[in-house]
Image 1 (spheres, rainbow over the protein chains, first blue to last red):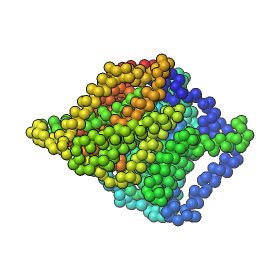
Image 2 (cartoon, chains in turn red, brown; image 1 turned 180 degrees about the vertical axis):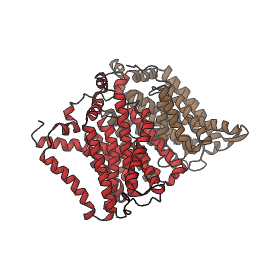
Image 3 (cartoon, rainbow over the protein chains, first blue to last red; image 1 turned 120 degrees about the vertical axis):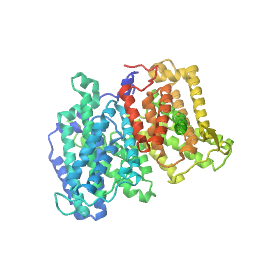
Image 4 (cartoon, chains in turn red, cyan; image 1 turned 180 degrees about the horizontal axis):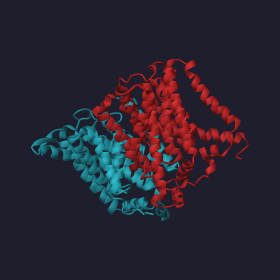
Length: 347
Length: 290
């Protein structure tokens, strides 16, 4: 478990580097897309789109929150899973996006597209400003720094009267789209959030498969080697941090579009921890696994928590411990292993 | 002028508490690269031990008893954490495990004690104030400062002047080599983990009359301790002391002068230190650097 006594060696993950073909995304990218995968993707798009036609307003608003949270989780996965930088600070950028979207909604325009754009820019700007401190470190120290950034931003939102202090900001009017009427029905808001979430997912998937994404996975697996090959790894890490900040900002704007309210609780340590938990449950490095994890985690926190006497986090903590011990590669690892076995072993 | 001096005293008291809390975090990280995210929860456990054992106006004896009880509870939790993290190979997974433990412990505490804000009274014997700088200052906080000084001296003697301290410092520097010399490093690590957690829990009791006990306090304390450790240098005891004193002052002056920006000041201090001295102000002298 310990390859060497050096300090730099121990701050990195010194386990034997897995061959690239074993990482979730590389695997999907290197194989021709099968018919089953197309069918699965089609089902994964059509079924959620049909949800407002089949379900009542409350389950639909729950699904909307899951989607917004999944966007936040995607940003955590981009850092933690793809680049190997474990983060507990993404809730700060999520919060920056949410606060900006509410402020834009209250003072400027109800247009949801403008709000999402503002949320994206706010998340990006916050990440640009704070990121250079965080990306100086790697591994556990990076986790520490992002936690410190996240908690600082959380406490700022809790104390600044311009942001409503601990009461948060409310009174955001319902969103509208491209000058149309207000979207009052939960289903319309859901469709908007779904569309943006799919677009973000596609964008993140494209980045993960691009040469830049390969660079990031190279950094995750062996940064000194990447540096020796001539890649500018520090710039790449700063870039992905800013990108993840922008994605989290979009998630925050989507969250605000549904809740029409934002409070310091939305960027608390708990949110950041749950986002990281979703990535771990779903499987680091896979993109669909963490989205599934996000849905599960939010379901436990918001819907099962009431029947547990408001102590959903207790269950989540226990799940967390169990996952770390029992399935270190998450849902994606378990399902992926079964699929590989089913198709007669790796090619 | 008096306000600033009282603020400086408050900062000194806060620094003493932060030193007690951050010490374990720093040593555990320095020795085994385990980021113990449950450290704040251990602190909160100590604070709730104080809530349970200390009704208003108790004597000094009961207070000492509460401190010992919290130390025992913290040591048990720390020992359990040490055993659990050793069963997992990867550092990130270890940190995640402690995060899970933190969630569970915090929820169990809120299950038992509710979500109300509890305030804890200082022991009756030291509950009064003394005249300092033309105002009255709580005796209890002066005692906390005294505790910080005693702790710093005791830790210095233990770590720099005893055989056990030599082993601890050597383990921070090069664990594999110490193990090769025939020392059971596993036992050293578990002991340091338990002792660090016990100190954090004691910090929880001692901070009780100042900060109280409420859900969410664990995260604030964990953040402060992390900043202290990062500023001081990971695994460095002198660094933890310096960082704790600095952050105590920043915190106290920030709340007196710019209450809205206090948390921002702490982040700014950390960013500044990282910019100028990425390894912290006083990195461990014994560390082997590649």
